[in-house]
Length: 359
Image (tube, rainbow, N blue to C red; front, side, top):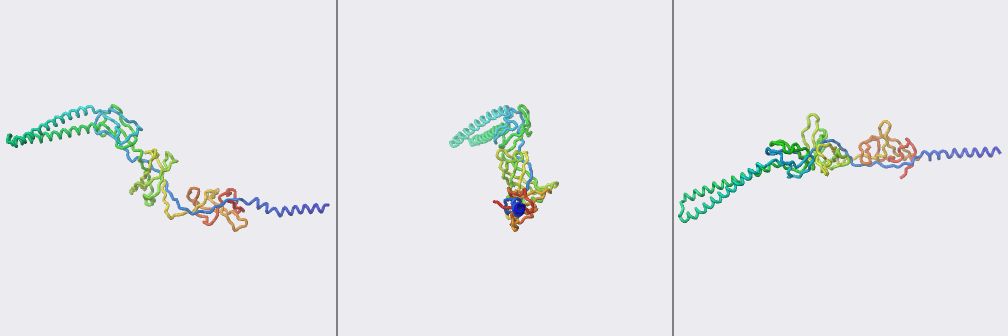
């Protein structure tokens, strides 16, 4: 009875030994997904911060002295070109205009009478009923009255213009950023009474290092991200490059322009400009971002597939990475273009661990 029992125990032990490699293989083989490196256009970029400025900023003043009669604006008022913003007291100027118009009417009457007398003298001279000297005197008087008429007309026009000078109007569409006077105040000619800013048209000034100045042109792709609204990206272009360097910082000024819908670039704020500087024939090797693993020393690695082994194994390969390109990341060195990299299941892989590729 003991011998059959011993045989069964020995048989079971032998069977367990034979099956153990299969069980070990099944437990250690890791299912993974893989991808091949890609070659794609480089996207080298430069980011620079700058200040948003309005295309037009004006400190408006009156052309004449006077007391502020009407204030039609306040800080923050939006105005259109031609709108009246401030009116000065013009009562005396209106009285003067009335007087000059009366003078004009008298000059018109005198000129009309002088014309009638000349016409009469010309008719009589044809009949030999008037001396030629009298005709000449009347013609001279007509010339004098015509000159007086033109002078009166000019005086009225000048006074009308002086009346207009008592109104301060907006030279362009914009926003009143600062009002510098109050109703009833006496202002003098040339003294600023308000600041008007054109908010619809703005530009961004950035300072670029001299080493990069000649790598940029009007064809360089530029995007602006307002710091007031980082979720907004505005296409832009280089409007002006000033070829004079700052002697202290060794930088050049670039002026960028972009559409400004909804005042996305408010004057005085900051914004970040991104310049794409890659050449058309530049390309880089990239892998999915999920393939990249960070080592404890902050270096990077990927698992590459060695299919020459049976079964296939995953080898940990150190790599040097570059810029992030969407869901891909540039691999500068350490990876062959024909390799396969593990993109799923690599978090728990060990070096030289058997793998099973699943799609």
